[in-house]
Structure formats: C-alpha cells, structure tokens
Length: 429
Image 1 (cartoon, rainbow, N blue to C red):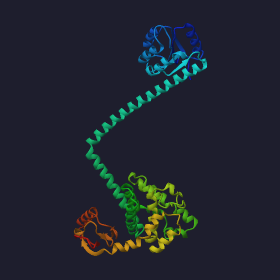
Image 2 (image 1 turned 120 degrees about the vertical axis):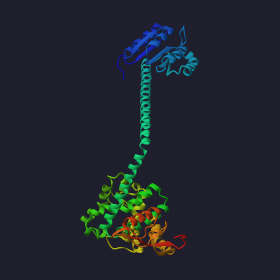
Image 3 (image 1 turned 135 degrees about the vertical axis):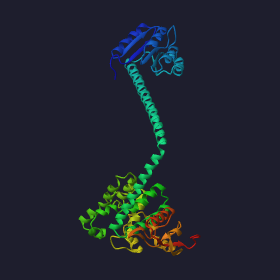
Image 4 (image 1 turned 90 degrees about the vertical axis):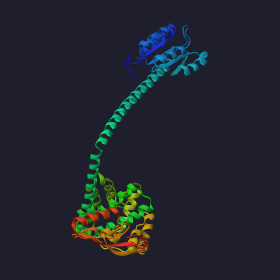
C-alpha cells in the first residue's frame, strides 16, 4: 500500500526505549517516522509539518496524551490519532475518545504486527477521506460551473424567447405536415385507410378513458393509430390482400418486417420517437407469439397491450386490405387465442357493438355549412376538397378543425356543405 517516505508518523512518548522500539518497527515497514519525547516540542513540530498518523502515550510528565491529542486535532485535524495506554488509564482514554476523537487506543504491551496493521488501517481511512473530500470539492466546483452555465443559458433563452418559440412552432408545423403527408400517402395507397384509422382512434379514445392512460401516452397512442401502417407501404399488393393465417412461410417473413420498417421511418424525427416504439411493437402479443421480436407481457406496457389489441380488432373489422369481418366474427377470432390478448381489453371490445347502437340512437343527421359547425358534432360522411379526402366519416369536430375548414373554404372560394350527426339534446346549432 505504501512507499517509503509517502506516509509520515509522529510518535510522542517520554520513554526513549519505547520510541526506539517504535522507530525500528515502523521503519522496517516502510513508514517515515519522527519521534519526540517532549509533547510541547511535538506541538511545535505539528505546526510546521504535516503527518498522516499521530501516536501518543497517555502518561507523560509535561502533558497527558489525551490533552496532547486534543491540541493536535486543532492543528492537524486530518491526521488520524492513536493513543497508547495502560489498563489503569481506561477512564481517561474514554474521555479522550470524545474530546480528541481518536481513531483507536492500544493497550500496553502491544502486538507489533497488530500495531502496524492498525496504523496502515488509519492511513487507509485517511486516504479515503482525502479522496472523498477531493471528489466532493470537484463535484462542488462542477455544480457551480453547471449552475453558472445554466444561468447563462437561461439568460440566453430569455433574451431569445420569441425566436425559440418561432422555432418550436416551425418544428411543430413540420411535425403536423409530415404526419398529414404520410396519412395522405397511406390513404392513396390503401383507399379506406382513413376510415380504419378513424374507427381505431374512436375505440382507442374510449379505452384510454376506461384504463386511465395518462395524457402524454394517450396523445402518442392516437398519433400512432394514424400512422401505424406506414411500414406496410413496403409490402406488395399480393401480400396485403392475404389474411396472415393464409400466408406461406416466405410471405409471413416479409410481412413480419413491416412494424420494424415503419418504426425506422419515424425514428429520424424526434417528435415521433414515442410513436416509433408503439408502431415497432404493434404486432406483439402477451403470449410472446407476436412479431417481430416475440415479446412477452412483462416487456409490454399497458399502452402497448391496449394499442395492439384494438389494432387487431379494427384491422379485422375495417381493413382496407382484406375482407372485413363482423363484430361477432372479429371477437370470435380474437377469443380463439385467449392467451394472446388482455382479457379486460377483450371484455370491453365485446361491448362495442352495443355501445355503437346506443351512441347512434341519440344522434340526428343534418347538412350544415361550415359556419354553422359547432364543437361536438360528428362528420356523418367523408368530406372531400378537389378530390382529396380531408375529413373522414366519424370524425368529431372541435374548434381547431372547424377553423381549418373555414380557412380552406376561404382560400378555395368554394362553399363546403358538411353532412353531420348531432346529439338530439344538442342545445345550439
């Protein structure tokens, strides 16, 4: 642990023979040792020289070892203190433990090897304390630098607040534009995709409320629902028209890559990272028989489980790629794999047909101009602009969507008439 001259020991004892014995003991063990018979002079030495360990006899004529170590602690608080004492001095020794905070006391006669080990242990403790202090000092300096940097950064942010807000809005606009562009591309590639997405979103929103999903995860789930099939743009029409259960081995292998491809398409956009994760895991099942990784329930959170189960339901019922199933047949297919899906989610999906009838019973159909649209109304038919679908049937109107429709109508110079469903108890049109 040590090299000669690295660690210094001060030994104070009024008996020369004790000092000679300790001098031989520690020099043979690679310690640098200074001995002193007079504690008063030892105090002077301490004032100009640093020591790692101070060893002092309890009984000395000029000053007791306990008193000496109390004074030594004030001069060299970092040095570890060891008291040599006899059994008759135990009361004074206990007092010195409190007053001088000694590291240890050794009763006479001592065992040389144990004394050397004790000193080595004291030095090791001191070394660790020094390292700790150095680390704490470095951390303090680093924290101060970080605090100063943060203060400068906050000042810069404050001074450039308007510019930052514009940049954020630009990024958000790019995010929205990218999502809308992908959605239009998906709808062109898969006619009817927006209808599927609309059903997907409506069911998801209901389950989000039922299972109390937090707002951030809920927003990611809804955005992911719009873009879930982006990876399918890489698939051939032949594969898309097949039911997964009817595909051969090679076709399944190709099909099972689409979640990975979709996630990779979104990952370069930081705003879509949450969506990329949901889309990558969209075909995983809680029985670990999904794809692309075969993850089990422990590796899927509640958002994944709800999203994946609702996706299976909506694809079977409203698929633009293959034959659409009835609600009853869809539930039969899902329940044929009871370990694959969460039973609570299936239990809720089982009631959807009833809920749909219940919801529709309180709606009235009417044609309205854009200026008459109100929040809470629902698009009863698809709305097109110059041949491009802009609002799919089933979309609920909010103030933001109504404002966009008004803006579109203004710039296109074409009056838009919208077929909507209105709750029978709606108070104002």
